[in-house]
Image 1 (cartoon, rainbow, N blue to C red):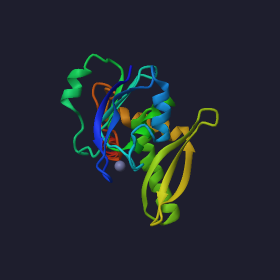
Image 2: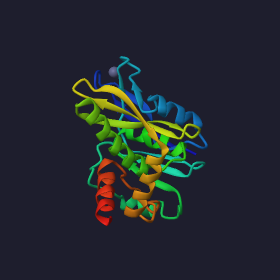
Image 3: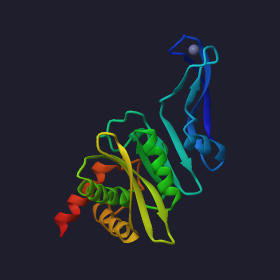
Image 4: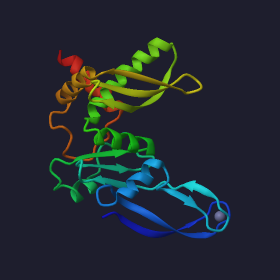
Length: 219
Ligand SMILES: [Zn+2]
């Protein structure tokens, strides 16, 4: 079951007190409708009943997919240097092989959901993303400011990313063969042989750069 509670949220525009449902946990397995609204971007939506002002609320929420065996803890504005959470660690220490992650942005949360629902390894996805980011930067001669996993085809044996390129953040899709991903799994395992399932970890570009660095040094 998802864990929700009602909270008073005063409207930033008219100060009216609204009763708002807060999602402390989202259970995607027992409440698939919450997964839908989350991915559509409206689960954390706020609409003032008095003046109609709309905003997205930002608060910590734990996403739990029991079927695909992963949890993602969304903590807005998380300190990126912080790689684990002791309180969470003790609360969910009995989870065995459930993959646990921390993310600091809503887009990162959505990306993790897509990766794990596709049955892929997010550590390898981050490593492959760096490699392709460099390819796109070279090809376009422009700075790549960000990107996310956006495509996976088991039949074609390919994965793809959408990158934001140049000053206008133009969207550009770059795909590659699954072999790049498989190689990235190998690199991730050299860096992190326990497969990172023991704790809530922040697996992002920094993590992937450290993994690549260690892999190159071991050669
Ligand atoms: Zn209002």
